[in-house]
Image (tube, rainbow, N blue to C red; front, side, top):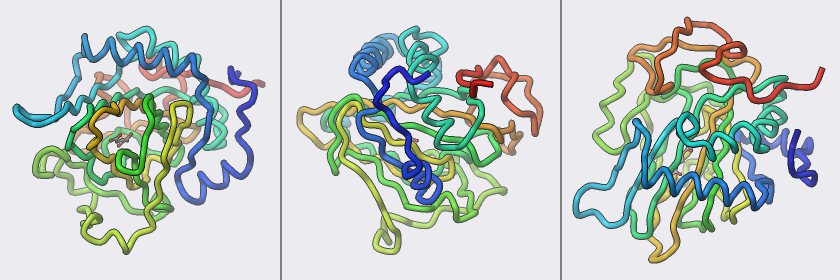
Length: 275
Ligand SMILES: O=C(O)CCC(=O)C(=O)O
């Protein structure tokens, strides 16, 4: 059940998600959830998990902090993922009858952080096939044009998969024969239909696993940029063995290629349509 009765995921939102690959839903994360997520993120900053990655280098301004799979060791993050509204919203947007939870991911860019999360698609990083892989992006601080996430409208329908790369190095870490190389989107921004939103805590962006997107840096002097994403697996999602091995999941799993996620405890079933 959605815990916030005034959330309505109307047909217009579902149609926008299907057409554009991204939709911004206003005020769908209740204040108590935002507070819980803030507490979860602060705990993680103090006691990061085993997969933490810090992208700022010595002498760089700010802090660019990433951590993954927090729910496995952080009860507040688990409570939100399992009991918060996002799994059901993802189910509605993807017209799924059930949702399994793949992982959560925290981005913290403290004031002055120069690090951009460069243009990428999420799904090539993941051992997941299917069209119903959906993410949400939840800001815990106000987001302006200069700190937001940008998307290329409709890019989930291009039928193109771009090779994963490590945006912090030279792009060669996830060398893959299976996927094509990235175009230089930044150099040719006018050729693309780039969409973005300014957001307040409580707003949430949902987007398709094949959407091209980039996360801006945080050049502000005093506003933190703490965001949380969740990756949801809908009806048609199956495990994909890729070469080289996908970065996600971070855990070892015994799943085989083509196996549906529904009954796999490693990636819990968190929402199911009432019979
Ligand atoms: O917040 C950011 O900088 C990037 C977000 C992102 O790439 C994602 O959630 O997949």
